[in-house]
Length: 281
Ligand SMILES: Nc1ncnc2c1ncn2[C@@H]1O[C@H](COP(=O)(O)OP(=O)(O)O)[C@@H](O)[C@H]1O
Ligand SMILES: [Mg+2]
Image (cartoon, rainbow, N blue to C red):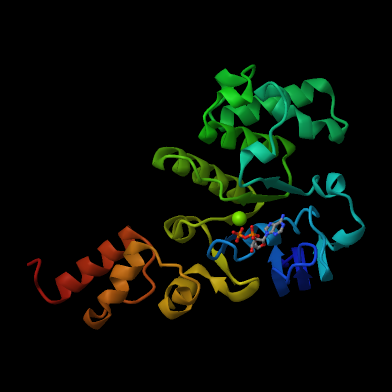
């Protein structure tokens, strides 16, 4: 299958007003079907970068293309048909008086019959586990639930690309897993997914590729396994690999590879090693 680039940044530089640039010379390509994590310390520029992917921000210099189209001349409402964006803070996204109206809102621009809109709203609310809250005032919900309202609004739009800015912040472990498994399913169904997170275990579990931002520049961009096997690189941006990877790295002299990502992988390695030296016989 041909690799089809959906998002492309070329020497993207951005600054807020007269401040120094917060993104410098960013070049990247994201292809159809990828699941990419954007990581980096607070203030690295992750949110600012992600907002260029749906045209909410435009480069000060350089270019961003979505589906081959230069975002500079495209309105957010047009780009929203291709790229759905779930805000880091759901309260920046929610402004209707019921959950149902909130989720339906983005679809109003899509020229869909009312029945289809209602079906999509129902399905999206069911997916995020908020069916019972169709008529609830969003601000009577918990922050975690509001995060899922924001997610449902984007799901209902069925966009080719979905950008999620820290989707699990404010969720407990079970809710985080529900959200990430949903993200995984979307990706398996062909959606291109870009998510920002501070949780390196989620990156190891759910992303194939990671883009590491540091002070507005790309420090590394590659397979998650190769990125996490470079602790010195992560240290530079104050990130720590997942605990299981750190454990593998500390066991390096016992012939455990430094790029273990999952507990199950470690179990298999230790089991094989134990059998080799006869300690399980
Ligand atoms: N609206 C804004 N106006 C001015 N500066 C901003 C604004 N939003 C973010 N910044 C600054 O831009 C830099 C990058 O921020 P951001 O993209 O939010 O980083 P991250 O998402 O990685 O935490 C930070 O120094 C932040 O203070
Ligand atoms: Mg951010």
